[in-house]
Image 1 (cartoon, rainbow, N blue to C red):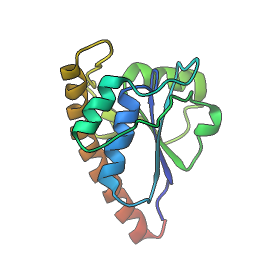
Image 2 (cartoon, helix red, strand yellow; image 1 turned 180 degrees about the vertical axis):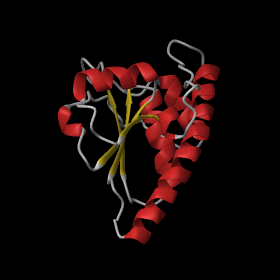
Image 3 (cartoon, rainbow, N blue to C red; image 1 turned 45 degrees about the horizontal axis):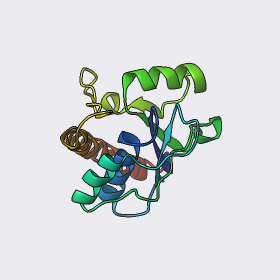
Image 4 (cartoon, rainbow, N blue to C red; image 1 turned 45 degrees about the vertical axis):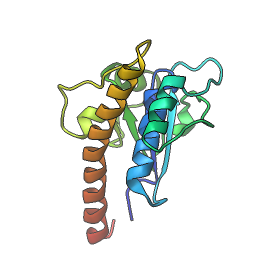
Length: 161
């Protein structure tokens, strides 16, 4: 049994990096072992995925065309949800506004993969090439995260957790 059932990516607006991360990880997982979603810290009203983010996803055989941004709520944070903040600033705001600091399932993505000094490139307001760069960085980071998730799942399965 895995210690969590859901993986949640948290970004500022839930219109670009968060949905891209969710799509990439869903492709890597292949099986429906986990629910993979994204949320935003600053979502005043539902918005579709940024057109450049969607174009990059489509170029990789993925899509989030039906995704609408959703705000993060306290109900999103529970003991069965692994939460990845996509920046240190988002992680800090998440901790300040939503979290009691006791969960071992809330990380920045770079922290989780052991690259604390690295920050995900933000494509906000940039060109299509900037969104492609963000996708490539996410793909690399999520490959490492996927490998760690699999190792932890195998370890938990063998110890009966």
